[in-house]
Amino acid sequence: MCYLLCFVFGALLIKGHACLSAQPGQVEAFTAGIVVLPCRLNIRPSDYVQTVEWSKLVEGQKPVVVFLYRHGCETFEMKDSDFEYRTSLAMREVKNGNVSLRISGVKLSDGGTYRCLAIQNNGRRQETNVELLVASWVESTTTTTLIYVALTVSFAFNLLLVSYLLVTKKPMNCDGEKPSQQRTSWTKP
Image (cartoon, rainbow, N blue to C red):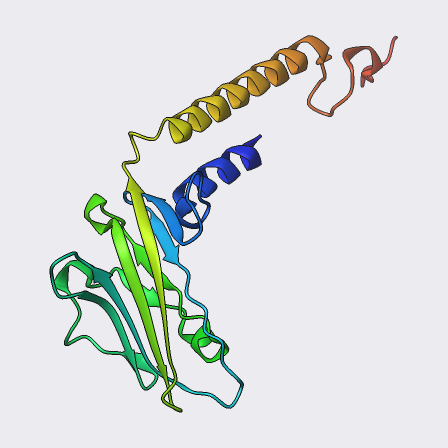
């Protein structure tokens, strides 16, 4: 039962990429959690990803840079301070074309449309948009329901297990023998 609880709570904490009602091109996340915005490039083994820029698109404003990768490492000078220490790429996966963005400590204000712009060494550009939908942890009735169900099932299972052990337990001595099987060390005169 402990495994079930760990699985349920673990799934709830990492829930960013397990979308309940999101459409293609959309990802749903919960506040304070972790979310991965997918972006996959079509590259050949000989290609080199020179630049990856993840930006949040704000209508009527200049895009906000949330992550910038150039020549093998993250560049910080253009990164918006609200995303500092919260965004990353799986650097080992970049060479395989996986430039998905990981956002930790998700906030309600993170919701919106994000653009992944990648430029390869051959000058080829690829662009993908992903919409992030953010819900408050406490507002999620599905999450709350799952927690209550898991706790109720765990409690009921543990109660039944303890009851069963109390009813079926036979008295034993320190050596693990039943009292009727005990040996006496004294002899009759």
